[in-house]
Length: 412
Image 1 (cartoon, rainbow, N blue to C red):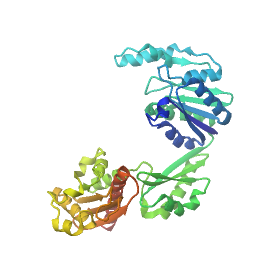
Image 2: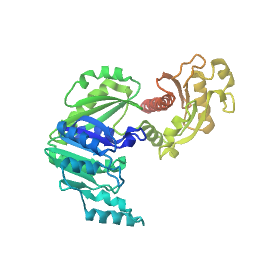
Image 3: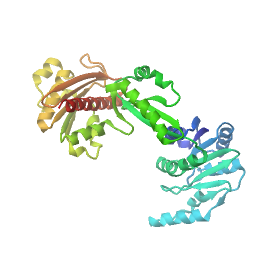
Image 4: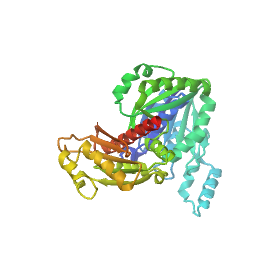
């Protein structure tokens, strides 16, 4: 089956908000064995929306719209679909009563404009919305399915997962698709593509390669009559890709680097302190975003390179000799912060965001990890703007930290 996604809203065309719905649906449709062929955005204009829907019906089996189901005058999705189907809108009083009950639970009086959201046409089936007042529409017309869902991503995603997906599976899917993801760091997209080239050409399972902020991901998807068969196909390819990618793999599926590092520290009853120069605290922010960070993360110092000679217990002779952006200073930073807060591990992280400093090019990142027994120091270079380099510096520090911890656990 061929699908098309239409995002509705003038605010999307003006760049006032970012469309999160279309990318989400693009990632979900392949799981149902449905090919997404087209995506477009149209403003809050009924005639243009009708024309867009007419065009979609000429080339797609499933048309999915998001947005335009609100209570205001510029919410015109229902009216456009009604005109497309040449059907008259009426008000479903049972929906109106549901809306009033919902508002009553919150001690609020329902605005009369919300009655518009109870609009129906004879050929539509209502899709319930547990997160809001705007129900969706499921319309079957001339061999096509039009599925209309609200614009707020939390409402749309809940409606999609809880109602739409089961209905599509029941009516139209004769097979199961199973997907898993391998997450790597330290290889470029091009290099990883070379390593896995033969797999990228396969038809079932398919392997896709995607550049993400935390590295390069490989997505493995297999289609089979049963979930068990699909899983077998995926796991076989996963094992083969693991053998090819080796130590560059840091996780799978929903893993995050900070979460994996946290698990290691908590499991081993270890503690961590960090000191970051020029990153704005990117590493500390990632770690403290974890609810369990207080169990292992003691402190994070955030400063810039000009302050290294002040009150941080850094050996001033080393700063003077090697410069404040150097592997030697990063090592001193890691040792100092670990000793100051008496933690199991200290990390020193230095980033050069630009312009070039002390003959060190922008994008240079220096990471030092000290555990009192060993000191490990690395230099890396990353492309990108300030924000991208800061994030990649934090990811690189977590990647190296995890790898070191696993190696030392293996040796004990």
